[in-house]
Amino acid sequence: MKIFKRILSVAAAMTMMVGVGVTNAETVKIGLITSTSGQGTFLGEQMVQAAQLYMAQNKSRLPPGVDVKLIVRDDGGPNPDKARQLAQELIVREKVNFLTGFIWSPNGAAVAPLSTEAKVPTLLMNAGASANITLSPYFVRFSFGTSTAPYYLGKWAGERYKTSYIAVTDYGPGFDSEKYFELGFKQNADSKILGRVRMPINTADFVPYLQKVKELKPDVLFVFVPTGRIGVNFVKAFKDLGLAKEGIKLIGTGDITADEELHSLGDAALGLLTVHHYSGAGDRQATKDFNSVWIAAYGKDSIPSFAAPQAWDAMDAIYEAIIAQKGKVTAEKSMEILRNYKSDHSPRGTISIDPRTRDIRQNEYLREVRKVDGKLANVEIEVVGKQVLDPWVEQNSK
Image (cartoon, rainbow, N blue to C red; front, side, top):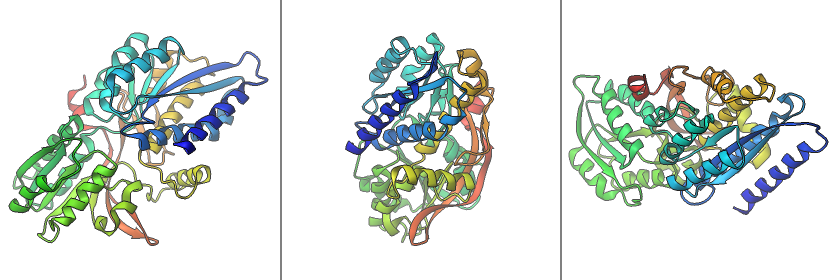
């Protein structure tokens, strides 16, 4: 936290220096609400680091006389009331031109009415619950929808396995994952779901929930849990119960093998298959360039999570809107630019915003944990969904 606070202090000083000597500068304000304390701190800090790094790398792209000010606010974790309060302050007091951030889907949802009423373009850097994007016409999602990876993983698994069991965390993204994995898996008429379980979001002991899996012996176990230590605990419980020795294959969304947690998993992670929209081991020049810039700024021991490229891409879209309007941004013109945003230089590959839904289109990669140069990595082995939109959004958006 001391290092993180120092980064914020340096960034604030840099922002002040940029304004020195500029006459009649056009200042565009970005309000970033995320979790720099409480649950989700790691992802929140990385969002801020990615945003600040993007600004430092792209300062020269701004039109003459245009300044960008990033205002960071801490929601303290999953706390919708706090997020709503912070958004109101940023809109009313700071008069921000853009809102962004939001790790937690409930926090993002709480801000939707304010974004709509004040007509503030709001870029979701995480907040993946599929329905979130439908809550405000001023929402644009630069992360993922929680139905997407499960659906395409389910399709892939249904072509290779006959039986499965589903284990998800008991909240919105878990429900999306459960439903859409099953939809994908059952596209093969011979495939069967042997059982399912919803696990409390705060549980650290997964053994009781996996005992049933051991009894039923499905061909494959699909899991969704929030990223971080929760995924580490789940994988270790799977190993400790000897489920792999029983012939059960563990698969899941990228949350269970997050890049930054692979060192904690150790060799227990080898061979795990996940579907996700990003891997730091991706064999793309944009991914390699992003990693190089990140290491130069934050050191070789800092591993960017998937939240970092999501934040990076959101900032790129904001800068595109600022540059196109020469700093004199309006909500409607900004939304028009954001709705039609496309990038071929994202760290995760080509991405675009679907103009109709304001949700992201991107690749979904099948990844396997392997050792690369002596270190564990999520190696992308196949694109199982090419430039796809979240299936729930596709079905439910007008």
